[in-house]
Length: 405
Image (cartoon, rainbow, N blue to C red; front, side):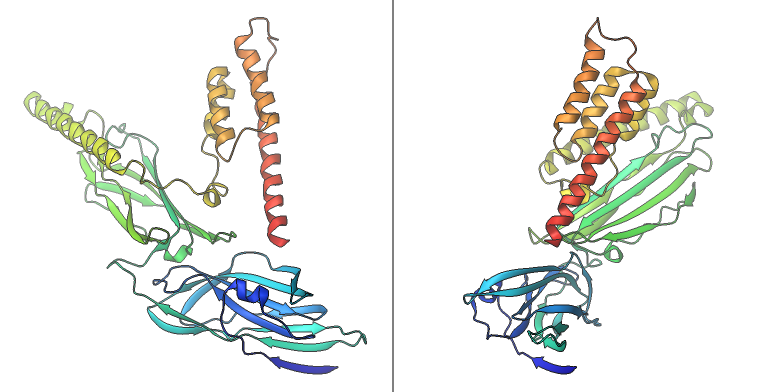
């Protein structure tokens, strides 16, 4: 066994240079390419480790270096393919890394070393090490006084199990807040806010944080859940919370918000004197009108600015129309089933031919007076959901195949 150490000092350059520069016969080089000139703290920097090898590679091992200056994760499968450079077909290796600077300033990434096992024509295996030049990053401070949080897209969903200001005597309100972001890590998402109030009984469920790699960048999610009820029923207001974040596409600070909520038992004012009750009702009506006006005004101001759910996030979220779909089938309400089925099908994309056929069968059962009266909503729903799962598995497999190719 012959151990050959190849240390190639390669200037950092763009992909177009890498594809056109000549490579010596039998040569090898490794580069760190990145897509940001001056990122801010915690902003995702996509690195592509690109190796060009005029070798026959049998085995390989590349480890990306850890550092106190950044967090990182691999976001896609390695790609091996052949490419013509300088008139010769060269073996190409690519790996995508998402890197997140922890602080402002200048620092180096790498060098990165790729350990290869080369099999020359003689048949003997030769150990080769190919080292990249380090990449240099100049990181800007986070442009806001809050905890640094950057993303390509961020969506906050605030779900309530009941009307918070009209709870029954023994009713418990479940509040579930989900923040999903593309292009950040789960530990960068905000800390759970404190909902405790003197007039409130609160039970907090364990927090869920997770990060899923995608070729567009990691999708991170945090879920907070509380069970809430008033101590005495006296009306109160749960305060709102604002979470500033930096949009890496628009280069602007945006805000995701948990809105303030009126909170209390329905009919609480009936136990006080009629005069006091009238005052409470009038105050409540005025507050409701003011809140409604504020909500309408805010909707008008923000119309078109609210972030749509990106496809990378949407693929990972449970379909929100499944519950309505199953409820309509259980109740035998075919019109509600038809409406929920269309919304369910459109959640992750267009309606395909098989789903259109199943929807036509449902339409036939609803509108044709001579239709077969033995239509079973549960059986139809089972087939509809099976078809949806098969489509999603096929889409995921196709995406994986494209990434690995």
